Length: 252
Image (spheres, helix red, strand yellow):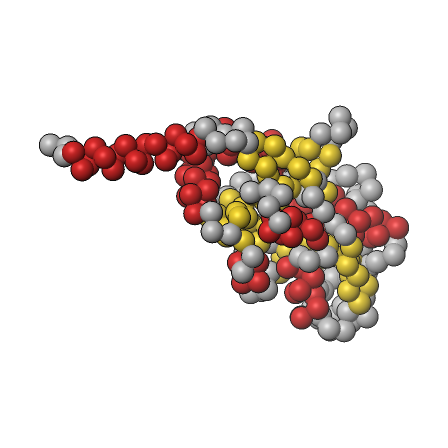
């Protein structure tokens, strides 16, 4: 038998869920300069894996959403200032970031690797890359890794990964360190055809392999809703369809 007290609690839970589903649009930040995860397409629109995942999550939560492109170096500050409620931007979960935002469960996995001239470099050890100019995005786990593990290398930080790769193409740097999936997209392009992965993917505690969605600090109801929506799009096949659209192998 369902008691009056149980009915009251069910009513509270249902009212809370309906209130969440009927709330105003979610503002979601992504980077917009990190293909195939987020980039500006030929029509001038935000596109990519992260963009499609964000839209699928909003649909699963029955929420309208608005996506905005924010430079990586400014993306956490914008959330702290209340400019948006979510960041779907291939973000690794670190202790420093956890002081500023909350995180969802992971939504994909990848590894970091160097890319450059395969005829010039065969090893990615710190000794082998001493004095080498290596570019990576500012404020990334890759920047922290290079400064910590490769003190003899010359680390060049750029506003985003597209700028790092542009410097590789121009010859201003000799290597780029980034996420292997992002680099695969570059290697398959015309300008990346003369480059290749250098050595093996890097396994290190400083290089987080899981990507998470960042959520405004303390917004527990949104964190729970996002995690449930991630389960929903995994079970209904939406995640797999988005995965296949941008990446030819599973990244979950």
